[in-house]
Structure formats: C-alpha cells, structure tokens
Length: 248
Image (cartoon, rainbow, N blue to C red; front, top):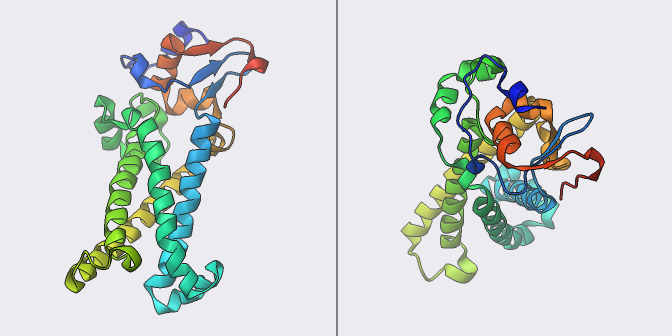
C-alpha cells in the first residue's frame, strides 16, 4: 500500500497528523495489510467494562420491577443482588476510567464529524463513498463514547446516593427518591446506548475482529477510517514483515 495509492480516490483527502492515531496502532504490510487497532490491555479493559455493564443491567433490572425479580437467581438471590450490584458499579467506573484516559483524545470532536452526522442516511445505507474521511473514530462512535462517559458518571453519583450501607446518612429521603429516579433514567439510557454500540459492531462487518484479535484488515481501515489509515501510513509504526507483528 503506497501513499500514492491511498490518495487515488475521488473523496478529498483530509489533513492528517500524528494526533489521528493511538501510539500502539501499527501497519503490518505483507500479502495482506493488517492494521493493529487495539492492544491486548485495551481489549481486556474493554471486555471488563462490557461484562460489568451487562451484569449491572441484569442485576439492576432485577431490582427495578417485581416482574423481573426472577433475574436475582443469576446472582444468588435478592439480598446478594442488592449487595453485589453497587460493587459491580464500582468496577465499571474504574474500568471505564481506564478506557476514557486512553481514548478520550481520539474522541474529541473533529471537523469531519458534522459532515459525517449530516450524511447519516448514507451511513445507514452503507454509501461509504459519499462520507467524509474519518479518523480512528467516526461521529457515531464518539457519540457512544461520550454518552457512556456522561451516563456512567451520573450512575455512579446517583448510585452512591442510594447505597444505604455506606451513604444513608448523607441524603434525606426526598433526595434519595430523586437519586433513584435519576439512576433509573440513566440506566435505561445507557442500556439503549449499549444496544446501539453492540448493533453497530455486528452491522459493520469486520469491526468485531478489532475487539477480539486487536486488528483489522487494511481494506476495513481504508473503507471505514481512511483518515486514520492515512495518518498511520504517514507517521505511525510500520512493519513490512507480516509474520513478525504482535498486536498486544
């Protein structure tokens, strides 16, 4: 893959810099171009966050409505569910904090995000040739990142407010009722965002590989995140020995 090849397309090339990729991203050029997208630590961090979120959703729904109380059997009963739920929330908070520190810079707004969002119809129709070139994350992925960031902060703060074992003396009964309401609304919102995130991962073929193997094909990067690939080719690490590349 040469730079001239990468510029041979009808879409205008966006200016690229080192800021458009993560320090661990790398090109492995051989019979097939492979692009390292996530390290082993990043993937482990992601999966701890994902599993925590699923467990929180299940345990939270079990406590949310009597008709869903049967879900407490997954956690050893009602009392165990009430005891475990907030601690899983603590795990989620610190796990996501790791992802936030690592990836917030790449999720900052960029000029092409508004163009991408304005062409959401072409996104849904997979008309990639009509979309602007984007960096490591497109506007949709940035929305999920920032929505998760805000909602997790809201959930941890409101959750602490109703964690009676440790914080019962800090809020009045009316304040606790408000905290429960905010916690419930934020929980429903983050479940919706999570569904969008998972659906998009399966909908865009080749995306799931990034979080299981840590890499994507050069074709996938070229089609979906061309600005990122250009920056990586221009300034990033490159390995022309495909068998020697390590993703972790």
